[in-house]
Image (tube, rainbow, N blue to C red):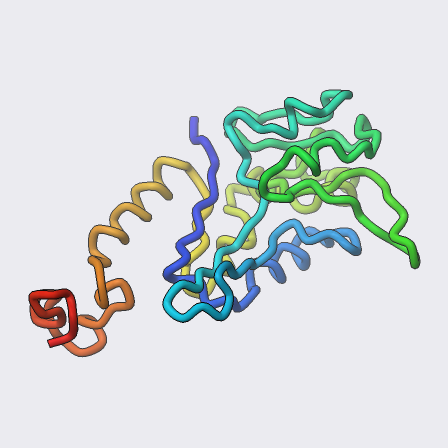
Length: 208
């Protein structure tokens, strides 16, 4: 059975935030929660900026599952890490344990009143019946049950964000890296100017 994973190709991400917008629109995410965020590291450092789309990575050894005192987190047969909001007590341990900041408190009011934790579901719903009103109200749309991929990955205009069977997305990314080359070829110099990688780059990796 497929094991679902996300991969974000930082060389393709253009920081358009369509993934985050698609997630909010598709799942009617609670106010104050960003299930998916676009993050830029080394911002302003020429040549070192990298932008990636971050959400729950549905870890094989998820720390949120390990620290939850009421065991509200569970893993589906597809490897998607979900949580049961009916069991959640809002302690926030999962938020502190997650390196990606995926579990978040919804906030309302001036002082941000806390409630049940919310997180990315890989568009796989929750423990309620697939496609039910209760499932949608608590967790958003169950696209996996409809045979579709997460909305964030489908809406990515440059296909920087890949979501689906871990083996498939890993092979896509591996193929990209091999064909992408190195040096100026990472940004497609040869493609843009009609030159082969050997012509586009001199003996020292510089433009000829």
